[in-house]
Structures are given as C-alpha cells and as structure tokens.
Length: 441
Image (cartoon, rainbow, N blue to C red; front, side):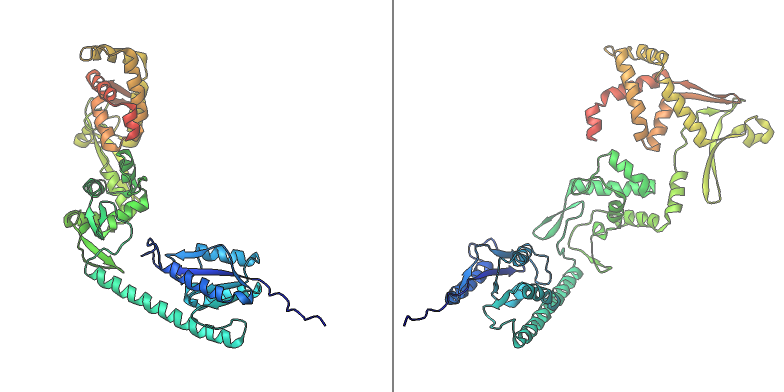
C-alpha cells in the first residue's frame, strides 16, 4: 500500500511594516527601521515550514506619528491588503502599527474583511481569537496612554521653554533667520519690517498700505506679495518687539527686537480703532491735489476743507471770498473736491496726448536735453498716463503741483494752465525710468 503524503502548505505572503516617530537617526547606515525589519524578517524565516514567505515590497514610515493613519507606507500596505496581495502583517511591536485604539479598530476591520492575520514579533497573540483581541486591546490601551503622557510632557516642556523666551521651532518670521535653533536678525528683511510699521502709522490703513508695498516690491519670506491677512499678522506679531508668546501670554525673548516699543504702541493704537474710523482718518489725511492752484471766478483762491455727515467724509474747495465776506461774495461758493480733482486729472492726461503740448514740451526740453526727440517726449507722456494709477495720493499731489500752474473755475467749467518747465522735468524723470526697472519693482 502506497504511503500517503501530506498536502503542500499554502503559501502565506508576509508584509513587514516598520515605523519611527522622529526623523532623527534615519540618515544612519543601520537605523531603527532596519533593526525592526531585521527582527521581523528573522521571525518570518522561522515560520518557513508553515508556508510563510516575505513579500518583496518594503513598508517603512520614517518620521511619522503612530497617532494618525496618514502615513504613506501604511496607505500602500492597506491598498495591497485590499488588492489581496498580503496574507499576514508582521510588526516588531503593535505600537509600530498604531498607538490609537480607534485607529487600530479600523485597521483590524480591514484585516478581518480581507482575511489577513496580524502578528507582533515581541508580543505573541492571535487576532482571530477572543483572548487575542482582549490582549490586543489591553496592549493598545497602554500604548495610547503612553502616547498621551509623552504628548503632555512635550507640551509642558514647550511651555517652559517659551516662558524662558526660547524659540521653539517653526517658520522664521519676516525679518529673522534661524541659526542654531535661535532667531537671528536678517538686516535686509528687518528694514522692510520697520518700513511696514512706519508706513502703517503714517497711512493708518491696512488696505491702502498693500498697494504701496506691492509698488515697492516688498514680499513675504517665501517671495510672494504681501496680502491683507499677512500684513495683519506682521503688525500683530510680538516677536518684533523681542517677546516670545505662548497661548496668549508674552515673555521676554532671547532674540533681538526689530521694532521699538514706541512705534509698536503707535501702530496698535491705530489697530484698536474700528476699520471704519481708520478709513475716515486716512481719507482726512489724503492730500488736496489742487491746494494753492485752484481759483474762483472772482480770481480769489479756493481752499480745501472737509465736513462729516452721517459718518461719511465730504471734501470741498471753498472760495476765500465766501469765507471772508459771506455767501453772496462769489457766484461759485464751493466745489466738491473729488469731482474737480478727477476733472483736472482727466484734462491733464488728455492735454499730454495732444500734439501741440508734445511739440511745445519737446522744444523746451531740447534746451537742456539736446539729443531728445519728439517721439521720446510722446512716449514719456504715454508712460506717465499708464503710471498715474499706480501712484499713491501723496505722489499724485506732488506731480499735479509740478505740472499744473493754475486752475480757474467758472460757471462754464474749468480752465487749466500747465507749467512748461514742469512738463520738461517730467519728461526727464520718465526717461530715466526704464520700463524693465519699473516691472522689476
């Protein structure tokens, strides 16, 4: 009678999973992940008689916490399990797979659904039995407790270090670099930060400061334009006055301050006001473009003034005759500032495109710039036309004072007289500004 032979063992594909919370030491030739894998591979080799074979893929997560399932190697492992490419998951200790009871319950559900066995090399149990599940839950409870204790210890250490003014990591704010785990002043960026505070105090508006910074080419640490949110964070960051902040409390920092306390306090006095009040104040500080240039039909000057009604600011130019002698002294008592300024600017831009003004300016400019051509004058005025909207109010006022000699108001409209020497100076300035340099700014 022939001797019966035992049926061949079913091959069980084993995937080894390794994890290390921090990246420290991973650059070494033989690191913690290698040590875990070596132990797991030895265990798989010892079960060769049971049909265990090692899959070629490596599932190593270096620098990932066990408190989350968002790990690249673990995701690959779960995908291979769902694809029925793995029969057994082997780890050095169960906390390498997870330190969270809830997360581990999700993993066990995936294992059970795909008939996958879970094995820990240093903790012997079987997840297919009720006793094995009980043992697993007890071990996981201790793993989660250990993770929470470590977290509390780290938070306490962090808070104590912040109270001592130490820098505890993260992105360096604009104005500083990180060296030897300390904040070191970056002089070029520090100058930009000081300029931001000074201009905010002068302008009084976050919204109006943004285009000014964009025009000057001020960027964030990463080289992006500064937006409203980033600007608020800069002005509110107590790091700039040499303080370290933890959970709303401030402590003297180890680093050098960039902003002096006086400038900081002035900026934050403005921030305490409502945005509505700040906008009214900034409008009140807007220069009167036609101050000293505008005259009424009686030949007397008109002066800038403003009033508030219903929380809104209204600007006017009012006749000096009316101020001195009453409403009957002049046929035009006052004119709305915004309307007359817009009308004057529109006429100036129109005049600068007229052939007569271009030729007159070219002839005057040849006395000081011998090689200048009529085409260059026309191009300079076209360049000014596109530049105007990029100027902020103080610059616009300066240009108007340079170009406009006089604005006479009458019942028929406004008559504008331009300064020839002002036009010549404008052409000289614009010729010095190359389009490439303007775009770079």
